[in-house]
Picture 1: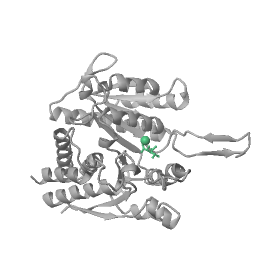
Picture 2: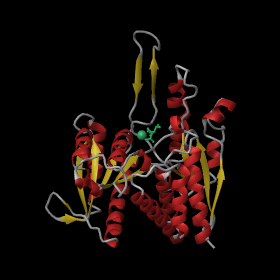
Picture 3: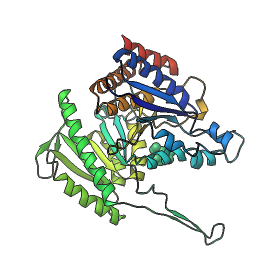
Picture 4: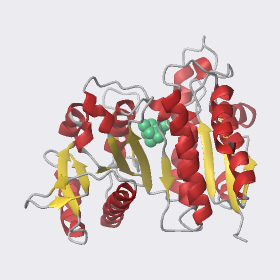
Length: 384
Ligand code: IPM
Ligand code: MN
C-alpha cells in the first residue's frame, strides 16, 4: 500500500471556495474509483476573513503547519472589501496576495509551470485557424529575479523620495530552471509521440528535433542577467542535443505569442517576464478560466508544492455559483500527475481527470452552466 499523500486545501477568498468544492468532488470520485491513498485537510487561511478577525492573512506558524503536507491546493486570494471603501484595492494587492509569495519563497517552489494549450471548446481569441495548434508550456523562474523583494523607499514623503527595487539572479537558480526546461521539452516530445502528435523544430544548424526550448530575456537592455542566462542556456543545451533551442527578447516574444504562438513549445522566462507572458499565454489558449498553474519544488521532497488556478478571486461573481471550475480542475489534474512521479496510479488518475475536463469543455463550448453543474458533469464522466 502506497504511503498516503496529504493535501492542504486552502480555498481562500471570493470564488476560491466554490471552485475548490468542485475539486474536492472530483478528487473524492477518483479516490473512490481507484482506491487512491489520498487525504486532505481544509484550512480557513490564508484569507481575507482570517485577516479581518486576526489582523493577518494567516497564522504565524502557517508555513510550519503547511510543511507537513505533500501539496497545497489553493483556491484564490484577494478580497477588496466594501465597494464604498476608496482604498479597497490597496489591501487586496499588497496584503491579501502576500501569502502566495510567502509560500513560493518559503517552500522554495522554484518552478512555476503554466501550460497553455488551446483545447477544443475553449474560447479562441485569435482569428487565425492555426491557433488550434497552440500548445506551449511556459516555465517561470519562481524563486528570485525581480521578485526577491529587496529594496526600499528612501526619504519617503519628500520631493526627493527614492524607491529601489532590486533584481537578483543567481547562477544556481538560473541553471536549475533552464535544465528543468530542457527536461520538460524532452518529456513533452515523448508524450506527444505516444499520442501520435509529433511536432518538428529546426535547429540553427539545420537538423530536426521534436521539441524546443525558447529562452526569454531582455539581454539587449538588461545585460548582466541576460548574458548569464544566455551562457547557462548555451552550456546546458549541449546536454540536450535532441531539443532545438531558440531565444527571444521579451518584447518580441509578446509580439510573436500573438502572431504565431503555435511555433512555441517550452518557454523559459524570469519571474516577472514569465508572470506577464503567462497572462498572455492564458488568453491565447482560452482565457484565465481554463488556465492551470503549478508552483513546484522538484528537488526537496520535504517541501510541499502549491497548485492554484490563475484566475484570481473574482469578487464580483463570488458566492453566486457562477464561477467556472475548469481551470481549477485542470490544475488538480496536474497535481495528480505531479504525485504520479512516484505512483503510476496517481498519474493515471491525473490523466483521466484531464481527459474528462477536456471532453466536458469540448462538448459544452457555448453552454452557460453554473459551477456545480460543470463539476457534476465532469464527475459523472469520471464515474461512467
Ligand atoms: C500570478 C500572480 C501573482 C504574481 C501576484 C498575485 C503576486 O499575478 O500568480 O501570476 O505576480 O506572481
Ligand atoms: Mn500573474
